[in-house]
Amino acid sequence: MQQVATHLMRAYARQPVTFARGSGARLWDEQGVEYLDAIAGVAVTSLGHGHPEIAAAIAEQAGLLMHTSNVFRVEWQERLGQRLCALAGMEKAFFCNSGAEANEAALKLARLHGHRRQVAQPQIVVMENGFHGRTLATLSATGNPAKQQGFEPLLPGFLRVPYDDIAAVRQLAEQRDDIVAVLLEPVQGEGGIRVAGADYLRDLRALCDRHGWLLMLDEIQAGMGRTGAWFGHQHAGIAPDVMTLAKALGNGFPIGACLARGPAADLFSPGQHGSTFGGNPLACRVACTVLDIMARDGMPQRAAALGQRLLAGLRRALEGHPRVVAVRGQGLMAGVELDRNCQELVGRALAEQRLLITVTRERTIRLLPPLVCDEAQIDEIVARLARLLSGDSAQAITPSKAAGPVAAGQTETRT
Image 1 (tube, rainbow, N blue to C red):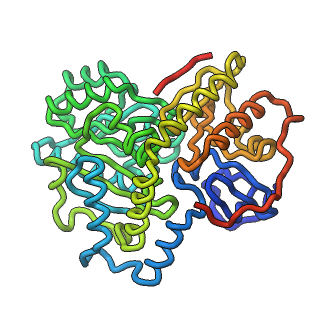
Image 2 (image 1 turned 90 degrees about the vertical axis):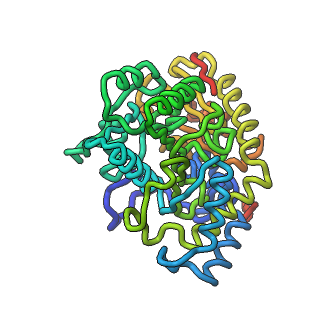
């Protein structure tokens, strides 16, 4: 792993490895060394790398029609909208290219909602440690000062409260009459794998109903089966007014979606919002293929079962570890919080264990394995992470160049 000269902007702290191909939960670098993927491109490739059905759909549609613009009706967009709305209990969809764009659409809906209610300066309640994107609006909604630093002045219109604290939201409701919406993640991914309580989400739903606010849920990381349900909020048995999706919706092909129901579904009128590439035939066909596979293969149920195995394995392997503060998660979203900054573990995991992980909030190891992992791979993720945290370099993985196919198919414990 050697650093090389680059003409790319320094927007990323990249690891010095380049992957050449993948299959399922496995990746191979340019030298043919095999790695185990425990982050799925940050909750994107939930159906794994090199999935043959997705590759075939991309190839066929690219040869037929890739883009026409939203000046015209797009049949694949209509199909995808209908299917997502049916799964989520929503009514209308807007398609774009990323999670940040989906959240931008949600924020615009909230402001339109406020202006229709004659609120001159609409305010949106957001959460500490939340993450909603890196555009100026979504960055302003994000609850991480480190990511906001250097981009001031941020946009006004956001009121920040602690996550999973209904009393804080109720207090705001008593103090202000300019609130129009609440925006949050059912599981905070970048915030350290924090799971919102079911009662909290139900209480938020009731509070929004009482005051005429929009409940807007960012399902970009938690959605698409990862938590053991199609969408994270479904564990609480509620329905949002607005919901955003991206990441696993395209399994690596860029697509985002903003879904709405009730009054929020009819807020946009022609010309008030748009996207050049959003909802093109290629992206929407890929997303429809992803939905086909996830439904056929029971991916949400699979994530629930594998997630239980992953969390139980982590708790057993790390019980009594002096540096481990907590193990928490839901489905195949798992976090291991340490008592120190552990960002260096990302590079060490690659070099010593041939394992892909990320670290959030400086101290939490985040695991987001592909939903297509088998039980043996889940157990191997646990074993490699345990070896990594043991600090025993003698247990490092010996690089393997074994040939593989190019393409193939809520809880917390403190220790």
